[in-house]
Image 1 (cartoon, rainbow, N blue to C red):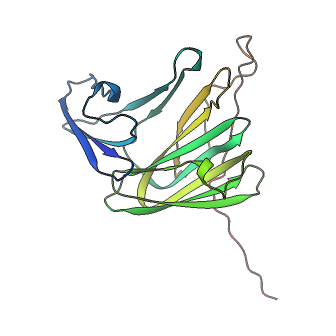
Image 2 (cartoon, rainbow, N blue to C red):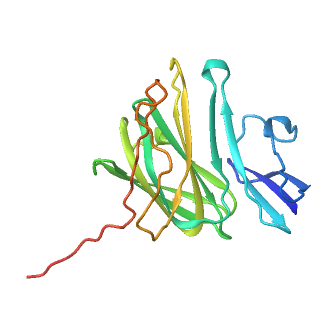
Image 3 (cartoon, rainbow, N blue to C red):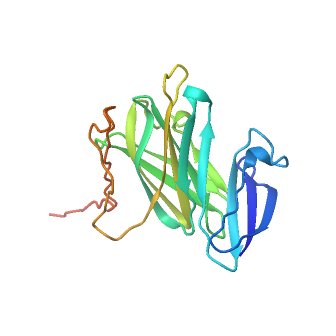
Amino acid sequence: TSLEVSYYRFGDGSLVATRTAAVLPGRSFVGSPNDEGDLPADTQFSVVVKATGAPVVAVVNEHQGQGSAAEALSYSGFSAGSTKVSLPLVAKMAGGWLTTMIIQNLGAFSTTVTASFTSLDGSPSASVARTVMPGRSQVIDPRGEPALRDGVEYAATLTASEPIAVVANAHNDLPGTAMPMGDSYNGVPAVTGTTTYAPYVTKNTDGVGRNSRIIVQNEKPRFRRSISA
């Protein structure tokens, strides 16, 4: 298959660079921004990969820091979006954790994305909006959103008129943190099923207290019923 890989700058949505490649069946193409001189440093990009001839999949590996301060996160690329995406866990400096959300517009037109946040105990709640151009990305960083409270964990639901994809990057790496940690997951598109499977859950394994938290989000919207007497 033939690939066209386009890098768009977060700041203004401009096209910065395009790669082309021919990939044999079962083989892979690797894009490494740090090794590509025409991509400016200290810059964030949204990337669109188009394949002609065969379906493709992608994985993004995120790295920062060195030695004991190293962190590694990973998420899967998206082949389709949804006008509703759920994020079961978003933190704003809760137990040292911060979750940033990256929203990409997979549609053909600009769209306004509304992110609705509700704390895990049901209160408080808040709403944040972003306008995202086609193929481009925007970020929600809780540190810059005064409507989101410090020390609170939220569930978030993002809606838009165009299909979107969302990645949640969680970090516990404030200066002075002895062992920085990171986690990344794909936002969950609108679903209709009522059964979800979790293949791997741990409790105090490997002798190092390795544990799993299971965060379950109710995707059914709330309805307010009016009664007249």
